[in-house]
Length: 477
Image 1 (tube, rainbow, N blue to C red):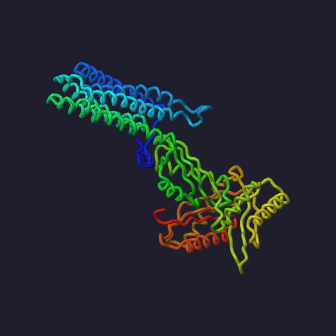
Image 2: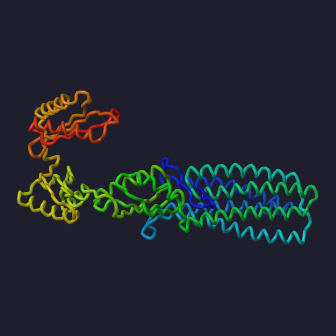
Image 3: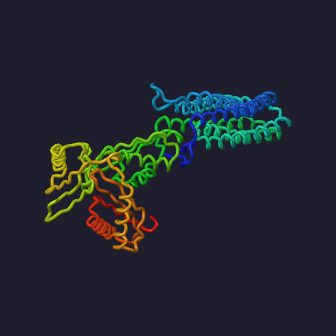
């Protein structure tokens, strides 16, 4: 997609992307077909223009010759751009295509300058008027139709393959249509005896060539100079919708529409662990790739958020991770302004009581340093278990699970209890989980109290069950 002059563009919206090698193979196939068409058009215009002495037709023929030249340049550049990244080019070779586009624009500008000199010379020293024949009109009308077909085909394929070179070249080919119309008008004027129109029309052709060249050069230069590729205002709302993201800072993007590199500064809570930040980054990349196509690389830089309410559970998990521990059920409470934290701490199951107590004591010290206003800390030490540690007693577990389900159904018979699950714990007990439906508009605190009441009753009635988890969800959940 050719970048407009007025600033950044949004890339193509996300669709199914193709293999990079298939893309470049498609680009080369299009360039070969358009090269054949451009050679036919250029040869016809130059031959008739030279035979009849029409400067405007010769100028148009040179213009079409450059179309073929740009196809050759495109073939060479696509072969280079298709190379994979290497040690010397870790970002790949994609910008060879951009350089090729700029080269086409530069050649067009040089050609325009030569044609300007010839046209001005003929205005002040007019030669014999050109001979306009039926073959002149047939040639121009035929090549005009062929130009329309070539430019439409190249643009359609450029959009399908997301090739900036094909789109730029299609714009170049479209300019041929206006050039050919100008030459046709010149032929009509010369036929009517207005001979000075021929060099004047050539100047108009030169102007159209120069405009096309300038657009191509400016577009390519903007890419090479790392112009913004995606509007930051489109990126920020998507990233800020990811859980755990507090604010989005700097957003930078560069590259053509099918090879965009994006850098983000994202502020998250200071205690966020590496594992948690990696999950946040993965979600950010997924949402951005779903919103925009052409994103080749997304770099997310995390910065700690200083302001805001402290997240005690997150802080506890961060300190526990640093010691290889796990924590869950972190509960914060205050009484008379004093902060109390209560939590379960999971330690390696093969530790002795003394070693487990020592490592948890170290964890408590780190947590007090991280939370200076912590007045009271209560930790429940338990062994971490793995799937291998948890034997499954099918018949016994089945009976216990059904007993737990009946307790929940007696307490709240209208909640549609379902998805009952039970597993054996490493400590010899069982863990039970089940789901129930509650009204959409039920306050979250009320749903939490409902779950706690069931959990407490199940554990009190069935001592074999050491852990109960109740999932409250709306009917459509």
